[in-house]
Image 1 (tube, rainbow, N blue to C red):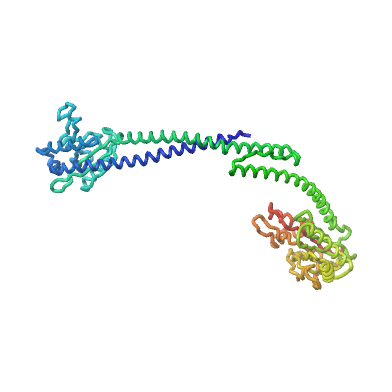
Image 2 (cartoon, rainbow, N blue to C red):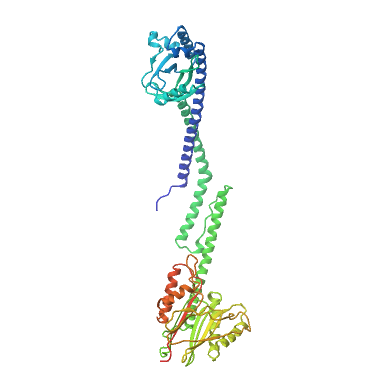
Length: 552
């Protein structure tokens, strides 16, 4: 068997995984919230810087300078004003641009730019430091999607500040704030832009996240240690003691120890919580198993005794029914075959046939209410009573009437039996029959097919005293067959809870209606088995078929 991880290892792994996932979740959520907050604050800051720069541009009519592509005296004064704005701000770039051809995004030119005192004190000439009106922007200085956004803002004459994140090979990742500049005729002529390096922003964010992760990891380690200590003391050790005690008990059971040797050692868990209750319940369960094994040992012996008796009862019941075939090999006037399969060890169905005299054959099939041993006992009594009355030479109606009176007189359990009884006169083929609440027989005339004989039903035997039974007669020609059965045939049930029914029964009988009675019964049984398949059956299945051949 594959070696399993101990509960201690599983708890440790689970705690580490849980806290690890929690730490990562805290870091990711912290990064997201902090990053969004920082980006929002920088966007607000860019708007503020733009506002100051835009006011200066309006003061010096910068829009008219862009429209005329001119740099008058006020141009340098504006540059100085923008320099002061940039010098007081924490930004990378402050400049103005315009499209030489508004329909061409790559016709972008600089209008002005601003520098800080630190940049101006580098010692280079102003022409090397400053960018002047009309200088084309660097190739690759702006990504195309950024240029499209700026172009659309100029075309739309956008009045409010805009913000976008862009990337270019020249300057990298930037947070760009922009504002459209208008001339004195209120035409959009260019844009005033502020740029903040996103990498610088991200560096601060990453420092924050690193601090959060290190702090969370430290707390995670401390929490795991505390958790493992408490888990080991208050959970794992008590469970290990319970496992050791139950494992020892199970090994005794697997070694087939005698019930009196199945003793569960007290594991002594005094935690006062659910684990103590578990330990007590396990001991109680083990004690119950030991008691059950003792009772089972006695019950097994008793069950074996009952099984032996039931097996004997099955053989006795089978011997009560005619089961030697051919039953009358010296009587060529008829051929008969019968079959019974009880749902349990013993059943309540029965069939019977015997010669009342040399010219009269009595046929009986019956179904006792209930199942099992009570039904089997009632079945034997009913069979004997019916047979005794029939052998006195009575008519079928009188046989059922007298049998009903005898059974009702001692029927304290209120059981009953349905029965079909017929007496066949062998010399003429005349059949006299009576039906006490039993299934309709199936009759096949000479050269015909099996059909249900919807005979008149009387009340069941044992149901009510003083019941009078009626009989009917019909004549069987040589070659005719009579098939009688119990409700176990039409009520055989499939796994889909569908009944076999009399239509399927007649179809099976008519597959080879000219076959012998034995073969007909086997055909019907095969059809029933194929229909129900593996579904469990709860009723006895009994059939009888007689073929009348007439006098030789």
